[in-house]
Image (cartoon, one colour):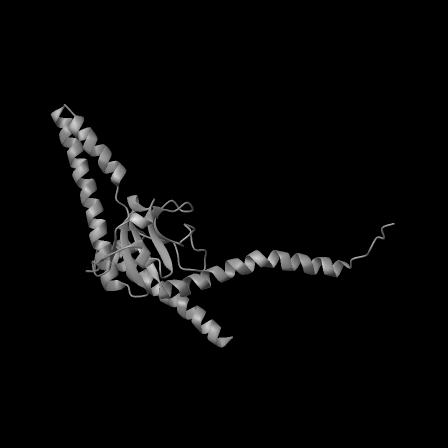
Length: 215
């Protein structure tokens, strides 16, 4: 005959608290671990290639028979290509002059499907392979529109393709009121944004390091 046994309510509450705290502790630890890894690793900047848009415009321009339509399509194509090239050039220069928190490399978004075949460029302009980069911790910086605010931003992802959770510095907007003030200075928007990324990385890393020393 089975005997019923009594569990004190306080033990049940304690067990629930431990169970609930496990994912919270894990989430708290991840940003701290990530900033330490990034400090010793690579920030890989994934540039937007606008490949689909450019390929479509090229195809439409080739097939256009109306001169006015063809001219309009070619104008949009040239503007899109210039915008892409300017973004790559300006942000490459910005990381070269405004960023030193970690090592940096660049690649194009259309190469994301197979990183082992991607062409990466270091901040010095040298070509490196994924095998060479992946010997260190790797984090990615994506140009995208955020789900929360629907604005253009630079967002940090880990090597598993997941956004690094807060309080890790993330979601660096590419626009905002600072754009108006930059018009009156000689600093470009990419310079300002990359400088801010560098500053916030250092700030969080120093906070984590100081807290560890204090404890």
